[in-house]
Image (cartoon, rainbow, N blue to C red):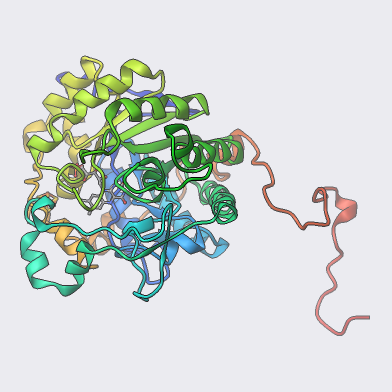
Length: 452
Ligand SMILES: Cc1cc2nc3c(=O)[nH]c(=O)nc-3n(C[C@H](O)[C@H](O)[C@H](O)COP(=O)(O)O)c2cc1C
Ligand code: SF4
């Protein structure tokens, strides 16, 4: 039974060709549950299935590395999607999300740029500009992290970025092409949505910011040029994946002197909408030098709905806003037109049944996240998150509830995105103008034995 206290938060909404059953989304979190080579593990599948079973309408993955180069410079363990071998785990993931009634969104990353770390410290991280590692001061970090930095050398490594090298224009182009192909792979794996990863000082954001982009070519300098990488990427993914919803996650502003302003980010959001974005997802903050807004306290996160209102005034597509954990406030914000969808990260670590509890009139039973960042500390150390509020976090695979059964009526055998519209071929052998589809072109199966 739906609780009438949350008519807006629990109402459906359309994004691109899909309808979300309510306005509650899992915000992307790199939950450090992937395997060594970026494969999606069964623990990861169970973790996401738990949130879908809990009534969350939209399940967004943590940043998935979408190019081979990008995957060599990460922090922790992200999932990968650039090789058909990745389809097996990702396919299991989307099947589970669909089985439990959620829609699956893949957050695809082109790379971490100067915030990336290679296991080989001497390797230069590909970034807009050479010689630009970051160095973060402890006092600009998120509450609660001092303890882990004091104890873990590995976590302390997070405070100093890797030295960078400037990406050439041809390298940018080949990375973009591989990225668009990887988005097609994600659609084949069954994802309903692609979220281009553009916030928090990672590669796409670094091209935008004057603090990290010192180029003098067509990808640097004036604002129009700094927007080029993400605008082109939006156009290419839109072309490559016509049957799914495509959107972008960006920071609402950078919160660092001389960094990106809210006005600039609204201007960018309008560009992205004009290029076919089906949604804009707002997070906040400039990156690792200033994580107070990225994984914020209640006070730091309080202004994001206000930013959402400014973006909403300028856009027609739905605006997703992060970090509004209080359902009463989220309901009021949506009713007041400040944003359309409430995306929560840590809050759904703490209580995956959040949406069900609202729908069943049990709002007072929601277990609230204390924003203590114990989960983040563990992720930064490279291990599976745990939470004092939720004894099951990180070990969902051991709960038989999240195993799935025979195909249900609402699931489709052919991936929904592929059924909506055929994907154009982005790659074919250079000597072929097209790949033949007709039966007469099929090669006869020879069977085993010596060739005649
Ligand atoms: C462990 C952890 C990992 C995160 N990983 C990502 C990520 O991969 N991509 C991203 O866009 N944001 C990431 N975030 C930011 C969250 O999506 C979210 O914006 C932020 O935590 C604020 O929301 P919350 O208060 O509900 O946690 C991460 C946050 C946490 C705590
Ligand atoms: S450990 Fe739990 S309570 Fe603390 S921030 Fe993470 S999710 Fe919230």
